[in-house]
Image 1 (tube, rainbow, N blue to C red):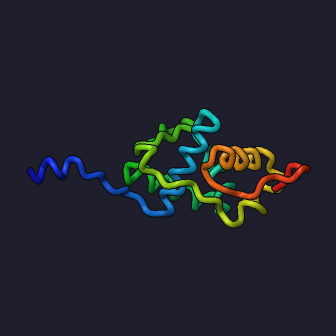
Image 2 (cartoon, rainbow, N blue to C red):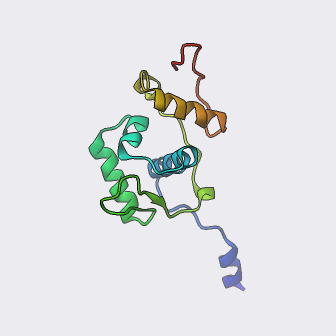
Length: 128
C-alpha cells in the first residue's frame, strides 16, 4: 500500500533556486526562439560573467538536469519536466544591462507578454 502512495507522490525538484532560474531561462528562451540559448544569452540576462555561466552549465549537466552535445553550439537540452520549473524571475540589473541590446529587450517583452514574468514595458522609443 505504501508503495502505491509513494508512486503517486510528486517528486520535489532536484535543483537550487538559482539553478531553477537558469533552467527556466533555457526553457523560456527555447519556447520563444525555437532553439537553445548560447551561454552569452544567459550571461546577458543574468548579468554575470562568462565563467559564472559556464560553471552553472557544467553543474546543470553534471547533476543530470541538462544535456549538451560537445562541439555543437546551442545544444542544451532540458532533462526535467517543464511543469517542475519555477517561473522565470526578472533580474534586478537586467534593465540597465539590456539598454542598447534590442534582441534582449524583445526577449524580455515577449516573456512579459506570455505572462512568464512581469517587468516594466518599453516606452515609445523602444527602451526599457
